[in-house]
Image (cartoon, rainbow, N blue to C red; front, top):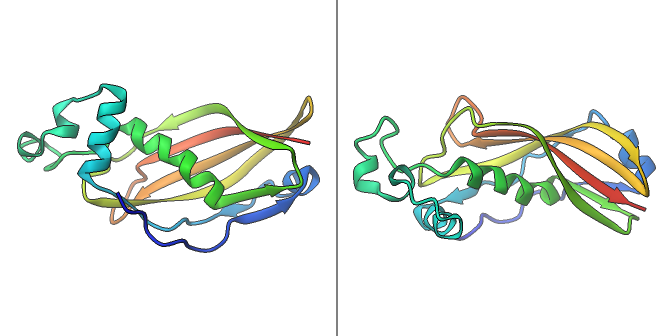
Length: 159
């Protein structure tokens, strides 16, 4: 499950005022990340989701996808992996994942493909002790016309 080499540094802001001022900023892309069968099988083991379309390459070859595909929730979880590669917030005590609003899986991620993330800071609102940012993260699969996952993440950075 080797990751690709590091790419450009994330977009960096210093403190909550700079984060607020960054609304509208586009982020990324990240380096490509291979999605091999071993990663898909590992996710199946962790979640208990061993549906054949994810873990049975022989049977999956006969499906409409032509191969096994990554779980949608595997792709979604990798959006959190992409976030610190897209954005770095300095001068705060901590950042926490608060949740997600809208999530969609427009296209599958075939085993053996690569994905990468893009982002956009959509909004920042003050919350007790800090700022909550809504960041749209889009995971694209190499060579696919549609994105694999689009999620509006909610992240809090505390002073």
